[in-house]
Length: 516
Image (cartoon, rainbow, N blue to C red; front, side, top):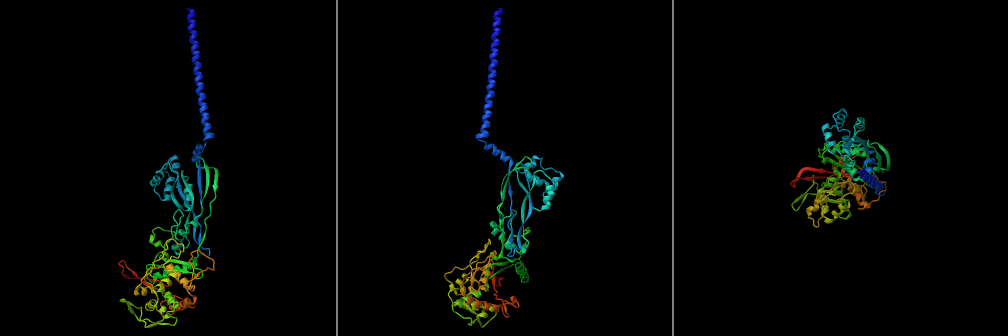
């Protein structure tokens, strides 16, 4: 009995020892497999495919900061500033950072921010909490430096400042229509600012940095230098621009006109020295300014030129040998197809000089009827009517020019005193710049150019000189432009008026006047 019990006890001890050895081996095997898996995973992440972790780490810590560059300055021909960029600040929020710091409270600092930005605290909270996981939202743009410094001193979590610039126009309304303005992102919207936007806009740089959890820069990774914007020197003379604008305002007020436009051109180079409209607007404060007031009428508005085309009619008649400078015309009123052609006053006969001085519709209509209908169409076209000036300003119109195969006598007659076509003030200025250079056609330029500027002769110099001499009589006593006379100077001028057409297609009492 004792031997059997001892044998059974020994067997149990052996089985227990075997079980413990097996469990130990299993545990060691599991630990070994876990170590192999972890080592394999580490090798995979560190050696074979590390990019994902690096990318995720960079997403959490790397930030790209834009290195801004100021918009180029616009100056007049002498370097006087017409548009400059002044440094300002933008106030922005990091909603996630604000949320992680406890959100917006009713504390004094948040109330101070609300007051400074003129945004009610509940609205400020709603804007920031609209996307709690967002990382960027503008709260205010183009804030002056003093206000920005005040907000910075509040030291609110998630509220940051960003450098930007705002456009300032020293000449204000004097150059408003020509220079135009930019939007809050410094993009050109009107005028030269829009037309030369690419030239005036620099290429911003870039700085890649690593930040810690508190937003502090702990490492500079790389940087790309910004490319400075170009400055732009216009052909405008700021002093002449101010003078033209002042006199235009006076003329509009004196004549009780709705609006007025003026263009001053250097006949030797084609440079535009002044371009003004009245009424104008303040580009430094656009609040409440209607869009209609912002358009540059010198390039967008068209009108019938009226008597301002008459010098070209006389030139054409002289060139074709229909008349000479001593010819006397019968200027008694007459009828064409039931339509009476007459002048403001009755003249029995006039010389060519008298036709221009008295602005005789009868005289120029008889000259027009004595030549082919294509003659005046060709002359007007050579002087640039019906063609855009290609000055480079956005929104310029080319006017309306007749494209007819057949002309009635009444159409030919009225065409000679400026009806049946539409031009812009800038086109008319180009016509008279060509006359002023004695028949040399030069392209107009809004940017400064260096003389000499070559041009194309479109009319014989002797013929144009003869007509220019005749035009001087318009500024003498008895002429329609006597108010333009300047003591001590020879003035060649031609005035023009045209009745405006009403909504029903009938003439109204309003009219356009255009001295050139």
